[in-house]
Amino acid sequence: MPRRLALPLALALATAVAHPAHAFRHLNPGQEITPPALTGPSGESVPLRTDSRATVYLLWASWSPRSAQALADFERLSRIGSARGLQVVAVNVDREKLSAEDVAQMTSVLRTAEVSYPVAVDRELTLYDAWGTNAVPSAILVDAAGKVLEVLDGYPPEGSEAFRDAVVAAIGAVPAGSISAAGPSAAVFALRQAASAGREQ
Image (cartoon, rainbow, N blue to C red; front, side, top):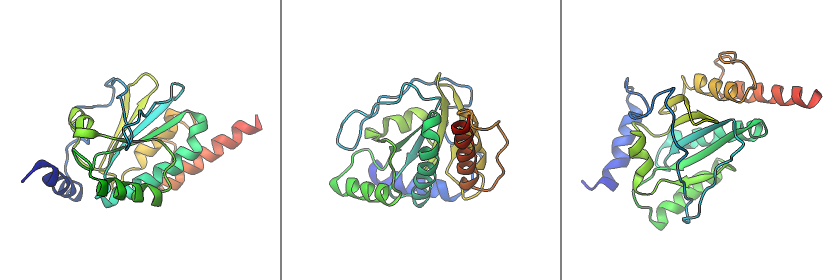
């Protein structure tokens, strides 16, 4: 089976079955990475912020049901956290080569999730392979120096709270570990509280 056809099936199975492997075989917390050179759906350069305190790279695909939820949840965090230095970048890993139909489907998913943060396309799945991605969607959180702070494997319905907690802590909104396991709304609430406190000072 050609790789462009086998990849979505293999990754769909990987995200449906729990496994002990890390989200990224070649990345671990504490490791430093170089900011990747990213391009958008039309081949345009996707510049990264130089003033960010933390960056989330969200690897997603239009054929992955959990990706749509991940895109929407991180949109909520991005809207509140951007002013505090949070940068979210969605990296599409649909296929090695995208057809016009693939791009249309990708655009539809992004529109439904109301994504406003940068979107890149991992052509030839270069970044996907370099990071050793195990499941889609998955995400990594890096600080301003490029150090990996946290990884998230497969965006499970439960269990992603620790990653969102780390995101909020990385931009100095709250101390690490202080967000209750109440889903994405808890992290958004923490960011709103921090933003309100900053305006009152």
